[in-house]
Amino acid sequence: MSTALMPFIWVIIAFVALLLMQRWIHTHLHGVSMLITRRAEWAVILYSLVLLPGVFLHEISHWLTATFLGVRTGSFSLIPRRQADGSIVLGYVEYYKGRTLGPIRESVIGGAPLLAGTAVILLIGFKIFGVTDLAAAIQSGEIDNLSATLGQIFATSDILVWLYLLFAISNAMMPSPADRRAWPAFLLTMLALVIILAILGVGDIVIAGLAQPAATVFGYLGIAFSMAIAVDILFMLLIAAVEWLVGRIRGVSVIYGAEPPPGTEKIVL
Image (cartoon, rainbow, N blue to C red; front, side, top):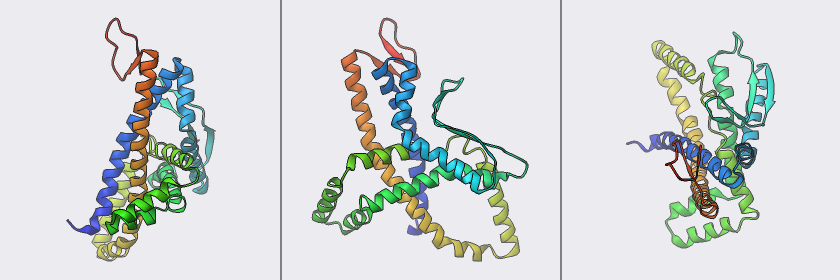
């Protein structure tokens, strides 16, 4: 396999992994909130407050992108709402889908939180944690360099605050099903464009010109996704530990997506 394809392959794998990890985190974070508050309304509030910085970035990026593209927007909310199917919407931005919106602009609006979240993660990674030095230490293969670099990272001022922001942003930046609604039409549009370029005989020239910029973009995406995965693993361990501890203290547990056995006290999500 060509090494030139590795950034693209890793981004796809990491994107799927982040979607799965986000699902687990949202589910169990809500479960911990239920264990702590023991009331559904308060649990939703606590759950939403934990992810509030990421939700704010998600929704404001929708709003700013739609406004920049000339799409009329409606209401903007960061107040969580429980849907009829039991799912929870942590925030939303309304925009009006007119005849001229089209799949390209709608896809850009839908993908804006992912781009904004990636940009902020990279900014924190490079400016706060010195990811460049960490990558160099890993490539060197020298334990002393890696240990020294990790020591510098753990000595970062306000490291817990920055880790929390990375966690909140990475678990609110992934596109929702509504955000991905126009993606199939967008991909079909791009496929049609590629076919047209191929018929005109300029497809190879365009692809060659875009190969290096695309590799650079996907390389940065891979770095951001890798950071998000690393932070998510840490917080998944923390959430699992808190859930177990609170459950032991209160003498209850959460059963996800199933009815509790008769005669036991359970909290069902």
